[in-house]
Amino acid sequence: MKTYYDPEDLKKFGKIGEFQKSMADKFFAYYGEVFQEGALTAREKSLIALAVAHAIQCPYCIDAYTVDGMEKGCDEEQMMEAVHVAAAIRAGASLVHSTQMMNKVKEISM
Amino acid sequence: MKSLKAQNHPLSNTQYELQLLESQKTGISFSEKLAECGLYPLLPTQIEILQINLGKMCNQVCKHCHVDAGPDRKEIMAFETMQECLEVIKKHDVGTVDLTGGAPEMNPHFKWFVEKIRQLKPKATIIVRCNLTIILANPKFKDLPEFFRQHQVEVVSSLPYFTAIKTDAQRGEGVFEKSIKALQMLNMVGYGQENSGLMLNLVYNPAGAFLPGSQEGLETEFKKRLKSQYGISFNSLYTITNLPISRFLEYLLRSGNYESYMEKLIEAYNPIAASNVMCRNTISVGWDGYLYDCDFNQMLELKVSCQNSQHIKDWNLEILNNREIVINQHCFGCTAGAGSSCGGATA
Image 1 (cartoon, rainbow over the protein chains, first blue to last red):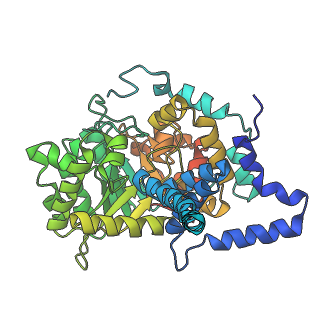
Image 2 (cartoon, rainbow over the protein chains, first blue to last red):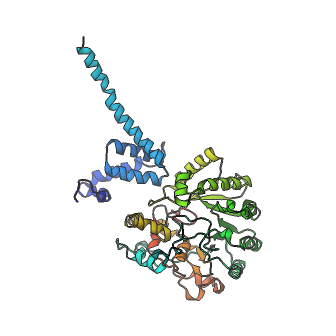
């Protein structure tokens, strides 16, 4: 069955330079450096990436950073908490806009 | 759970395992990969480690075990074969004697063997690959920590994770709790404690179809968690990749992960890890005295290639140092990513 998202396509990610090499090279160099050990550990960065992957709902990234998290020793509880952080921020981002609704309601109400 | 052998499982037949590995779809052979970086044929550097398998008998039945060890395995090294091993240890400058199994302590001559090795080589490193739970399996094993201490034995023990759920999923119900108790007992006699000289190293095998992450990162996390939750100290964590043989191969096939796991190993091939593979400085002795390039080749019954020195009683160092190492597709497990060996990452 053909689908827009094919797990096999994730393996082709490294080949996006085929159509525009210099930008792809710069992107992958930057990407590689971002995920190195730094002020944050590679493990912490992996959990952030997993949370962001859920926030932006990228199936490739969810697959990739689930495996990456397992490889880096994260457990299921930690990974699920990271997803809840993403979910909470998404929920909060909606809910905080309710202040605008409340303002408007108050503005036009007697 | 029974061993694959006791189940009469097709994967207990090493010829079947090898056929499966060789027919793997990606079509890239390990020898071609070695040739790309000038390492084929793979040759030894110098034999520094003698790894001796004292038997396949074990009190545990771990789901990833490459030995297919368990209580139903009765193959253990005979006293005469141990004497032949001692002859080799006596004659040659073997820096490290690495005792493995199954549970090596279940061999009835285990303590005698360790005592003899220590008498022959007071300065050699003697390693025992202790599964930890054996210490609590029977009152006769409770003095093992003290025995190890007296003979300055380095203890290397598997602990796939610092929580019960993941550890027990790989090693069996209740293994985590017993492992923690055993580690505390080892700490009590000085193992893993600063300046004690008593080395306690842990082994991390991924509990699933994925590769181990950074050895350094995992060691930091293990040390933090084991110390804060259980007061346990240890020296180093060795990350070891699961090789696609025996029970782990059975898991890969059953779970539909075999092809993708092999692809991952091949994609992650690292030439630096390839140049540092353990078979270049190790000889593995089987429970029946036959010689192999590594413990994995032993389980696949791939004996050393040199016809005139295939058994411990025929040991010839010169011939062994000049042999070609036997390789196959499972070897990709030792060269993926940061590499893998019985002493952890290699690159």
